[in-house]
Length: 323
Length: 288
Image (tube, rainbow over all chains, first blue to last red; front, side, top):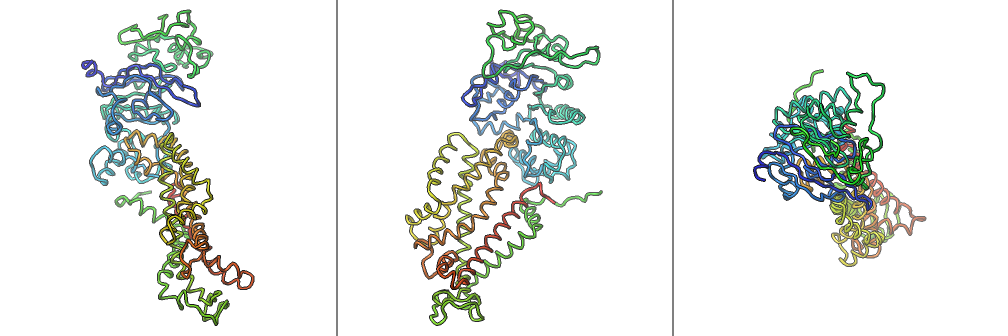
């Protein structure tokens, strides 16, 4: 096990997370296992409500303590199980080892404090520096994400959406984290800004030598940014592998469906083919494979038995009985 | 447009002062309050008579050059009594409100931020407090602690504390769901830091506005306590007490009521305006 941990920088084993809401139990994450090596980037793709953000928040351990419960599993980061370390130690890990870029830059910044102040805060918490020094470092960070250093004393409402997302990225990268969790970093932005922000994340990732876990529902973004991809459905990973392998040979019927729903430039198609049906109710998941009610290839076996991950190509795993 | 190189960063207090200065009405009110406080502080030098000097030959006199605010039912000079009384009334208004806000904010913030059992326990205890009218609660506490200035302030602030706690808790409940609170956790802030630096500054506006109005409530509350012998002991003047003593003469000698009443009204108005100015100066969206 020791050897295993040396190799893997981030390793999630059989993570299970539940939310309770009005007496109902919502099964958000149901046994997710993931691995990520140092310097690599992994795209986590899935529909809204598939559990992507919950996984990221579990790694940061910032799930709402009242509504959510981690029911099982381990998350090793540099060999440390972040689900078990004391809170004081976890505060040191956050930002220093793992940092998160939030989905919506409009709400991820505190409206009553200047952006420079907010970047300086994270620097001050994790480095033993003077206030003046942390402020200078904050201005340097702003410059690195392409914002004039003079603007450090301005408030979030004086920035545009894309600029705010740059500030959020500057906060995430301020302490040079080893792992960056980007939770749909471009969803709230318009398309031209999306490209700029993605490019910047890519560039900074190389510059800071960070690993990246990119959460998105946009396969195009994954193709541009990531080395590996994991497809998640109803809180389970259904397909996982190197990007070329998964994109060239999508195997799980859900992944196939996702690609079918994408417009393509090289093919003449009148209509896109969406995946039939709706994502399952997370309070009442179907028996067997969670995807079987929507799956065109479902058999009796799928209705009864939950498929396990099997290696179908080098490093390419898929959880389906029929592959 | 060229931007000159900025001077070293201003502290947030300097920024606050600069922006508060732009709130003309609030600054004027602040000056009035300061002048009033100063006049009351210097009462022994300014007041033409002693506050307890009884003149049986000059009862109920209307304002004149000898007694610019007139005299009361014992022939005491109302102007002098207002000056001396302001020492108590202003101090009671400010200190009792301040203490109520402080204690209320601490409990309200803890209840709102942590939620769950902590919230439940604090709020149920406060429910018990709120089951009694706040003035009854103050009377109860002051009769346990005894009369006197400090005890009265404690008694009055306990009565108002629950309201502030509820108000802050309510706005924290909505603020704490916003992403930046989660983001603050994600950068490694401790709970105390998140509450003080991220949550309260975004949630305190309703409480500040409420507190500025609370000052008047406390001055009048002090009068109620004085009425049943739990406030400032009798010969010492105090605006609320002067007001309630004068109400028996409202038809015959209204000036006795008007002057302390006007002083309370001015104080309240000024604190309200200052509160508005503070709120606007603290809100970066209204900047410049």
